[in-house]
Image 1 (cartoon, helix red, strand yellow):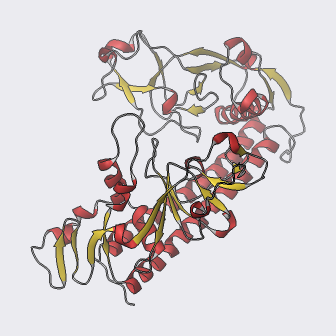
Image 2 (cartoon, rainbow, N blue to C red; image 1 turned 45 degrees about the vertical axis):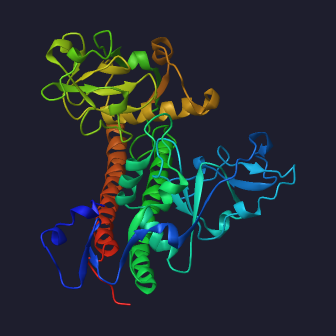
Image 3 (cartoon, rainbow, N blue to C red; image 1 turned 180 degrees about the vertical axis):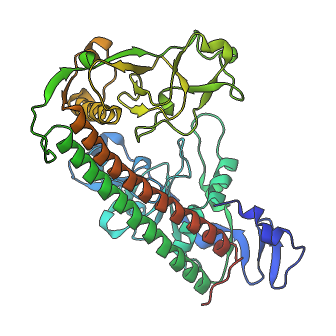
Amino acid sequence: MKAVTNNTAFAKEKARSGYKKTKLGWIPEDWNYDVIKGFINQLNGFAFKSDEFNQESKGTRLCRGINITKGNLRFDEKNEMFWVNSNKINVEKYLLEDGDIVISMDGSLVGRNYSIVEKEYLPLLLVQRVARLRTTFKMSQHFLLHWISSSYFLRYVDSVKTSSGIPHISAKDINNFKIAIPPLPEQQKIASILNIWDKAIAAQEQLIAQKQALKKGLMQQLLTGKKRFAGFTEEWEEVRLKDIANFRRGSFPQPYGLAKWYDDDNGMPFVQVYDVADNMRLKTKTKRKISALAQDQSVFVKKGTVVLTIQGSIGRIAITQYDAYVDRTLLIFKDYKLPIDTVFFTYVVELLFEREKQIAPGGTIKTITKEKLSNFKLLLPSIEEQKVISKTLKAFEKEITNLKEVLLSIKKQKQGLMQQLLTGERRVKV
């Protein structure tokens, strides 16, 4: 959502019949521009003792910052905690209710993680560093939620949060957030319209998740030979990675961080772990560009080269879609000793690392040596069957990409409408 203060349709007018000028911009005369303090009951969470937490579903579930994502609450076996009132503390006022808004008050995503509480999560206790907003009869809860989800709120949070230590906002900061406030019936109508768009977004996200799950299952079957295409009966060969490809690490001049190694205006793309996306491609632009001085001490790869992250977020793989230089935290597959379809090879290595992560302690591969990587074993069909498999998976991936593009379009349309409705530029009939 663009900054409502940059509302060009209003900014060009010095005056408009039926509207008044505020720091927010032009809003209808019958609307108020005020802090939300007088329209909400705000509460900060309680400092429950961590030694009284448990994960055995005994006691009352806790709502901590880790449980709040952008628009949703998330509870699973890794982050779900319960509290047992062993000291008979009266915490009744910290019990959340259906429709309450909760916001994370600290951390790198301060103000960006918010959710509305639903019945399925109750009973639920509010923990410190989380704020609860409960509206009075003067304001629609969902109308307020749309303001909290706006980029206007994010910019406000960034302007008031602490700049040293862990980013943090206070109860006073939240109470002093100013918004345009229409009469209650109009608030409810605006919230109802925007809720319809939210449902469309949620439905599209669910469709994408379903398609991704189907793709994952299809990969498991096709890349292991459990499902074969008609006409292919030849046995697959188990081959070690070192017998399939020649590979080497990238490089970068030492020490890291010197300004002379970078040229973000005129340099060449420099691929680091951060630049490998989760769709077997590099991000559209690399975070940094490498200078001409540093290029002689790095490794150049042409478009279409397979690269694999081997430090940090290990196991992310991509086929480069542009020429670039590659950091030492990635492995470069230079050429192949056997007939290989690179798309098939990329899918197989991705699946290989998924399996390795499942058996690794804590579900994470922290380090990987060239020796261990060299001895990883893959099942390899004929080049003809590889191509059929990769074509099938690429078609599936394209379908998911198209669904994501539709989702992005829906979100953009909602943002534009949201700006118009929350500022009164577009009025609704009540």
